[in-house]
Image (cartoon, rainbow, N blue to C red; front, side, top):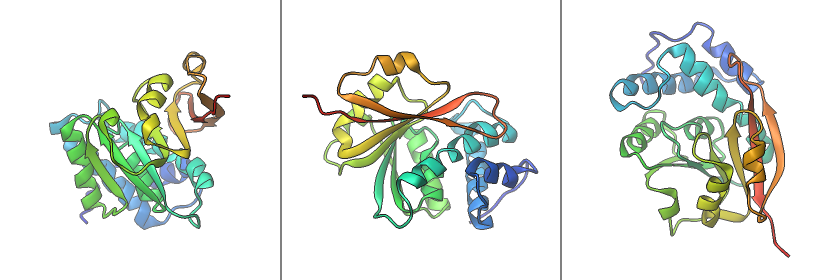
Length: 224
C-alpha cells in the first residue's frame, strides 16, 4: 500500500488520537491518513467533497467521523459477534470507511446514489485492504433482498424522519439508527413518527472543529 505524505498536517496523528480519545496504533493512523490522501487525490476529478485543504479534511471529515468510533465501540465491543452497519448517503465513505478501518468487528456497507462516489469507496476498500467494507451504488429504498442491519447511520443524508422512513425495511428488529448531526435537531426529533423513539442524544467533541456535533440514537417503538 503506497503512503503519500505530501501536504499532510504535521499534527495529523495527534488530531486522530484526540478525536478517538485514546492512543492508536501507527499502522491504523497511517491507514486513515492514506484514506485522506486518496480522498484529496480523487477529489480533483470526482468532486467528492467541497472541502479542499488537508487541514480541512482532517478536522471536518476524519476527526468528525472518528468521534463516532468510541460510542459505537461501546455498543459493539470487539468481543461481540460481528454486527452489520449500513452507512446511507456515504458519499466518499464518511463515516463508513473510517468505521470499517477502526472497528473490524463491523461489516460495513456504504450506499450512495452517485456511481463515481461508490466506485471511489470500492477503490478505498481495495487499497486499504478492508475486507469488511462493501460499496453499493443504489438508492437505499431500492435495496431489497439483503440481510438486515444492526445499525444504520448517516452523516448528511436527510432529515431524521426521512432517514428512518426510507431505511426502516433494512433495520433488524433490535437494531438502532445513529444519525450524525450538528446541534441537537429538536425540530427534526419533534417531526418523527410515533413508531420511532429517540433514546439518546450524545454530544460529541471534535478536535479542531468549532461547531456543535451530536449523535442521535433512535430505535423502532412498538405501538400498542
